[in-house]
Length: 328
Image (cartoon, rainbow, N blue to C red; front, top):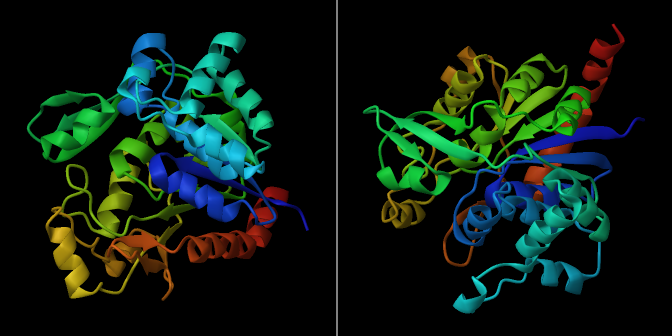
């Protein structure tokens, strides 16, 4: 049987956690990672060097690495001393390798070799970009880290400069994929920056691969307040300009009241499952009784082992159909 090609699209913690869960499966993983982050160590490096954001790239490289644990620990090490800018070693290595190779994409490839990663990590673009948001009152917010702070409803997000070209390898990966997975992660600041690139839009709409969205379990203050599962899907479709998502993995059971009360203090609620709307949209819902785990501090998280297994099973189930389409 051919080796399955799975493309992961996103950023933030969600993408790296998912990548770590999938890396031991017999699949070819390509992670297309957002480079619009502008906070913390990443923001400082961007300001000085005018390169794409290294932080999310660093996390995915570490997640997919198959190297000595100490080397991965070193790569993720962050200086606490303010005099050293609170930088992580991985961010500094990406910045240094960009200077050495004179190309951010090439820098990621070289560090991928050093870390012996399982799969491929591709920045969505090799240019330094800024994420902007148009709010419900027409105000335009500049900068990824500033968008959630306004606590207004987001109408749409866009990148500047507007003539951004994605990496060719990203487009090739989407076109050759058997399954494309978006999320989990912040809808507007981790997932959308990849999807709103023009050539990525076209590739993801026209690909013969199945397209899967992993919906967040809880709403996010400043981004998705009051959103249901179908609202997440609709926002993606609106930004891409077409309805294309085939599957969504989401939670359909209510969480414990005590946990929900705890999240209310953070102005977050459980993402409402609205199955009938999703059915009308032509989206198939995937559930599992063990999809969710609760941390000792009563935080809700995806059970990464179960999530990875669900994704692998979807890929296996669809591969014969995909192959049939390609052979027609």
